[in-house]
Image 1: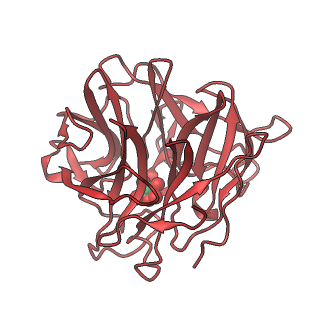
Image 2 (image 1 turned 90 degrees about the horizontal axis):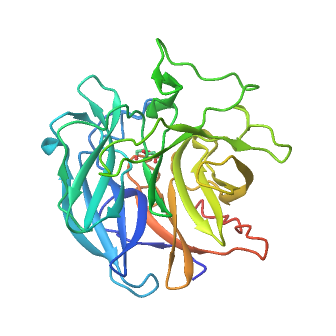
Length: 322
Ligand code: FUB
């Protein structure tokens, strides 16, 4: 499969987080909609208010099943607005959906909702996770522990925090200062809270120095973690430079060394992905805004196979801008 294909042409879905549960691929996307809010740097135009779940049992020939609405803003007791990129983890017979949502003070928090099935419905907890902030949770299981990677700058509000504490006012670094990092945290045994203080996911260049804020490859949002041949691959979006990049490390906390670009810019401002192995092949799930004529808040899910070389380097996918 060397050509990207759209997964669900009949509605706008973005930020696909994909896992294998019960032998099938389950896709947990954001559900884009036209709410009439004008585009701005705060991302107010991404005004989503529910999630659907999708499944498929064969990427190349399978039918995509839409399991319908599994969680809505109106059912979340602490909700303000904007359900952004979610993800799901499995433990001891239960599925846990993690979602970023602005609370009633317009601050992004991360919430949890629980189901007995991978396809929901998911029942939200009464409060957001204690100490949670920012957006884009990604769940990764390794040696029996569940890790959450999260965070995003600009509209994702990560620049409002340092060392897990809210600042008096947001600070983006200067271009020659180290970039703001994604965060990683082990979850508590019951999966409902952080099990420790979140730590920085530091990305180093080939000389061992942290990537700088002015680097076009620095972290912006859309954290994803996967493991290939015993190595940990941290991948992410560079936001305003529109790339999906990756860095590798020896353990889930890093540090990670920058390796390269996985996906060059697609149509639409955002780019966001997940990487998963299924039936012996590796796939990149992502989105673009081609079907909506470039409207960046109306995105469509796609999938393409990825390839590694003998050194474990991922071959860059380019030329999907049209
Ligand atoms: O879908 C809303 C936001 O757009 C996501 O949380 C970001 O990663 C970007 O894709």
